[in-house]
Length: 389
Image (tube, rainbow, N blue to C red; front, side, top):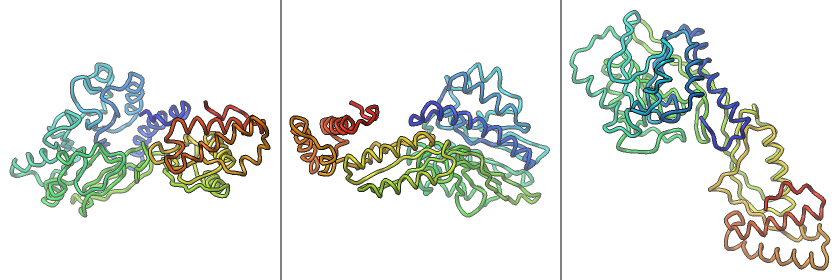
């Protein structure tokens, strides 16, 4: 998965860690004595990734010692032109990997388990696959109570709060929660494994319906990513679900009020106190009004943080920080003659924008601000590479 806000070195680290997470699944399976692994959709984030991604995936999943069941989801539906039907994956698919390409039951007779999946054949399938699958099972009449059935599905369940990793909100394709609950209450279904939501989430009170979430965090706003679920089934079909941490990445969004040097110092301290910086991405949502001098101090803090963090970015749509030169900025320059007149003209223009719009929202205002920054840098003999014209 490519994250547009990551520098090249961090993106490479992020991608490597995704494949490490796959191998960690295998180690956890061995450690816990798990008999198989289920991945409920969106194994790939695009319909047909490049050959390097496919080959690395094959190598990683092929190292796992137990069967791995993969369900196509909304990002990687099972359809012509998809990774699932690509020659490369078909020729090299490891023997331990089973692609759930239809709704036929997969029986694990020795374990008394049956896996039934509802794969996506399109990005926005209709009707909703999981509810349709369960409805079809209900119409089959009697069922073997000695078999533990697992439904593998993908999509948003109604009444479950939205998570940034969820697919696009589409009420018509939401899974009815009542259908899931009735299925497990009846005893026909022992467990429902869901994908799409990137945060580990229990659905309903039964303890048998779960989103396992993303094995590695993918974006800001995800509540509880980086987990996998170990599901233990007793002889009488009781279920115990345990969370285990797999992913190492963290995406933090922080709203900050910045109006003074003290506020910049507080932000600097907060950044210094974060753990695992090389795998942490910070999105700042600033608001406030600062002078040029404080802005330079803020830029220094951000630039230093970018050397240690995987990424530090500003929110594009919610940045309400305004840089407004004040008297102290002018006095520190000690300008005379033409330079003083030019500075005054720029300052008056910048001040006139205060009531109309933020400097970040106006190209003309940004040009004026850059000119003021450049003037400060020249007078103070500072490095000019911080100024973009």
